[in-house]
Image 1 (cartoon, rainbow, N blue to C red):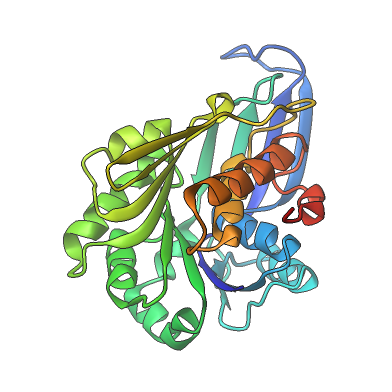
Image 2: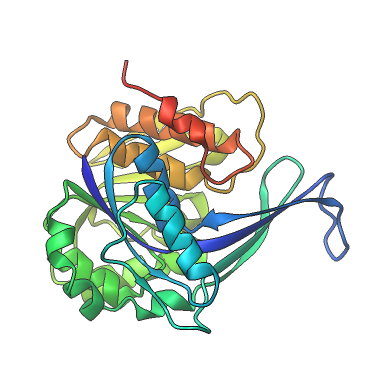
Amino acid sequence: MKICVIGGANVDITATSAKAFRMGDSNPGRVVFSWGGVGRNIAHNLALLGDQVELLTIFGGGFFGPVIAQSCKDLGIGIAHSEIADEGTHSFFVSIGNADGELVGGVADMNAMDKMTPEWLAKRLEVINDSDAVVADANSSAETLAWLIDHCERPLFLDAVSFAKAGRIRKAVTLSQKKNFFALKCNAIENEELADVRCCERRYVSLGAKGLQVEAGERLYEFPALPCMVVRSVTGGGDALLAGIVHAGPLSGIEVSARWGLECARCAVESPHAVSDEIKKLRYE
């Protein structure tokens, strides 16, 4: 499929403690430096799955922006319509994980995405609507997301990203005229924040080790998480989940999309990296 992904592209700094994390203290462990961002990670996963991907993002300025942009090209991700910001504009995410791979907390510094306005996207509307599906993360402003909801003519998948940013989707729906889109992906905490937002055909709620819930119409589907050999890091698991769901296609059944999402999520959490190369080995049976 031809998929347009709209969202953040970060420098990810991931620290994982060797033992149970002790708050307020220095913890021995491992630090991994990599390229990330919800939008970029989703695009990376989709490229590994064999989809034709166009990423619309604003890379941070300074040394890292051109390097991340080149890495996307090397992965086969289209970035012809993306932009590199000026010096002093940032896109960083620092996360701390416990020894069991669970997220302790994180800090995002992503002021580069402030430049992704409705006007910026309007210049790229032809690219957006030339796709089979569109994915957008909530790193953009509510106003930008509202514009996208109103002008996207393809099935639109929105990712809530975090509790702090989930509210942007509620505001976007309020601001939009269309007030509906195809699918929402969120985790349990984000789902609580968006409990009153009922404007999509499908709602995918990631429950981590407890699996996945899918709401479609009046029905609620529940799927258990797939068994993992080892959980090395949950960072990127949600991004892989949504990539698998989108890869299955908007016309696929709930079960097919859930299976693909869970397979991709399993690959991600078994890897120390936010995106696992093992995903490219997954195939339809």
